[in-house]
Image 1 (cartoon, helix red, strand yellow):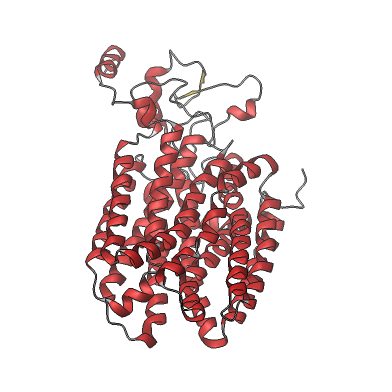
Image 2: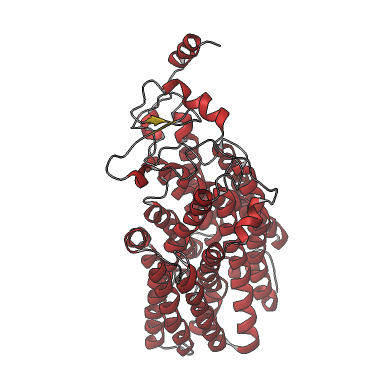
Length: 496
């Protein structure tokens, strides 16, 4: 096919409606945030509902409610743990992330329908399993899509926004679930979840990835600041998608045929995440996911999010039952208490911005260290009085503000690890890169946390009581500060 024919075909291709808006950084971020929020919301909306519905709707005996409650939450985490590595590998070896995104949406819809019709505890179990598989896809592909879209320069702020939507969804969903269940009933909770999924469907279907938008027009307005349209790159796809624009690009052209924008003030700022030369074949056949697991800095990021989500999941698994028995609260009050954790989660974008400006190390260390005191002090909440309720709220607010300090720095540092490895050893991960697989590991860590948090906290309470559980969670939070000090942002003793 000659150049004239190619230009004629490109010119005859009709541009999608609102192409620039639908492929903009802001809309892609909003779509990813809504998708992540939806998955997190559907995880947490049953937190205050499940202890009551298991007894009233599913007929589970009172002495088995705690076991079933923890087991159903654990199944959700197990599904993410198994599904995330597979989703990451598929996403890094296909050029269209939106297909995986849509698949996650279908699985989520099926899970929600099962949740609505469930009367048996086993049907609830299957529903949570499907929700976990959906979350595996959404988190893995969504976070990799963010890196594709904005590059590394401001990734901390963008990750902070996306992951704060997750934290906010995890925390505000028990609040809304408790209110709706107490006032209207179980099916109203299902209707609320279904409405949120409809919004998610519309936004995912409207979103257009950067590189697909580039098929219609390659310009400053559609190209991301770092000069690439996705982490999945190879010489053939680059030439096919961008080769026609070489004569019109404002940047210089590399050997793979793709145009890269230039920055006269700071050449480093214009460098793409991947090598600007044609991708090299890897010199060995070690799977990318095992190469990633050999990097201490990446393991530190994974452990940081494990600590964060374990603590939040522990609250989901034990707090509603604890306040139900201690204060004789209804599902409404058990849901309202999560507002104390929900409000601080809104500061995620601010924390991400600080991480971009100051570096991730000390923010992550502060988050892990400062979470320890309020967790340990929660053991003081041990009898029914107005003062005890106020103390519980204050300590939960403190936990919310300190926990959010962990998420953004470690998520941004994860993408920095992959970027650094690609720069120092081009082609080591193959032509597809390893961003999705890195975030699959990140997602596995979150999944393991949702599995570990409720089960460990529930077991500690049943065996030794609330005071021992909160003390153990406090020590566990502090354990994240040590690797964060040594490795977050790079080895602390490395020569500058």
